[in-house]
Amino acid sequence: MSETRYIISDAAKRVAVEPHVLRYWEEELELKIPRNEMGHRYYREKDIEILKMVKTLKDKGYQLRAIKMEVDAMMDGEKKDRPVERRFEVVEGNQESKQEASLVTHKEQQKTEVEAADRMAQFRLIMSELIGQAIRENNQELSTAVGSSVAEHVVKEMDYLARDREEREDERFRRLDEVIREIQKNRQEVAATTEANAKVKSEKKRKGFFKKGK
DNA sequence: CTTAGTTTAACCTCGTTCTA
DNA sequence: TAGAACGAGGTTAAACTAAG
Image (cartoon, rainbow, N blue to C red):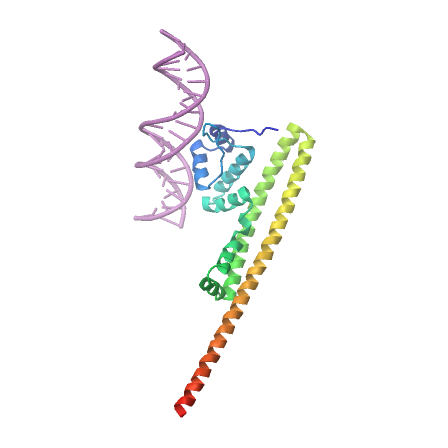
């Protein structure tokens, strides 16, 4: 089955923006818009859907930076792990960074995580509404155009995507748990080292004291 | 004042169509 | 068939506007 391709002017009409705006978004959002043999952009249905969502979010007042985060996730499905990966970079990085990370207070860490989770929850709510709407519209079009067999395929695809998403969520929480354990372990190591150093210091002091005493 | 987002303008390339 | 005209799309830079 060949996919429908739209040139930039047609895509712009469908998204209800000017062609130069699509080029601008492509650049700013780092969208992977494919090119034909002439080097001209062509847009597929999924690209149009993403751009429509970008437009909707823009209309709601979101900045391109914020939209970019969600578009990244839609494009490669990797974004949801990113905050955890950042922390992994810290934990798996050099010893200094490791210790630095371990020194972050528990309260600060909790606060940051709650705020991030809050923002993410709000964003997901909006996105799920938008995606739901797009899917409903899409399903309606599909059902009239190609009949129920395609709709069944779409439902299966959605089911697969939902399961895939759940699995990624599970993986994310598992990794988050690992990071927290790693940080706690580092804290314990630092505490143990500090304690050992203090012991050695007091031992030296004691020995020095006896030497002086002689 | 600065910044982000958008618009406009200038100029180039390439493919298609028309005409001598 | 060659070349001009035209349209579509490209890049780049500068200007404009609104909000913080």
